[in-house]
Amino acid sequence: MSTNVANESLEGARRRVVAAFTAHWRRIVRSRKDIAKERTDFFFAGSPSARGRLAREFYGREHARQMASLTAADIRESLSPWLEHALRYWLDEDDDPGDPDGDAFLAELPTAEYVSIVTPHESFGGRTLIDRYPGERALYDDLFERMLSGFSRGGVLRIYKSTGERFTPSELRSARVGIMRDLRTGIASAGDEDSWVFNTQLQGAWESADFNGEDRDRVVIVEVNDYGDRLLGQKEKKRSQLDSE
Image 1: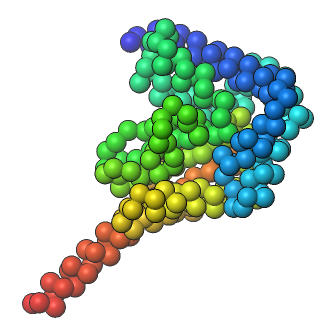
Image 2 (image 1 turned 180 degrees about the vertical axis):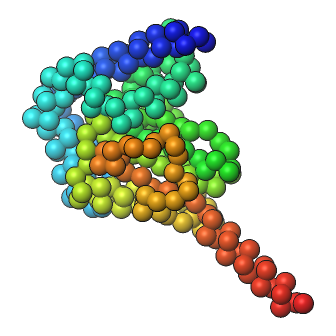
Image 3 (image 1 turned 90 degrees about the vertical axis):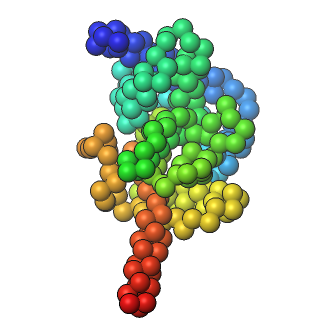
């Protein structure tokens, strides 16, 4: 695809995401349902009460009206933490503007609570996965399935608010707890015997150049790997070899 065609496709995709965002929040403003109650369990937080509070704030009338009244330029800025990453992913995966699956992907991105970006560790291959979270197209789709299932050796999980808004310091701390709890629940449910190591310190060679300079107040980052377990095994093996000599 030529550069001009790619740029035109991306611009059209941006407009579809912006339109989907506006339509989504206008529906919420008009709705008489208790959406916060219906969606409470989908928020990442350290406790049920914290999840409920986040849901009420996110789907509250004041916030919904604010989101529904944003201009196209405002929406693009608000979604900027994840938007261009998602559009590049769409362009690589499914860049036919007339394809129903591609159009559905774009339209659904801003309609959940979060957008997730999973970047597998480069040394283990795999491809970046970007989608709304929670997803509703697959029967089994949770953080464990997106990040650690199969032959995964871990990676970097980024969670953004679907609105692109900032997390308060307390929201960041609480979200990390909720994310790690959900990952550990998935690990236990799958009977996964790998000893996963969690890193939330935002430092390490695992960081990707694609995300240099991002606003750390607008993303929750959790890195997961099994390096610690494998390195321990290597040390024990070496020690055993030395003892046998």
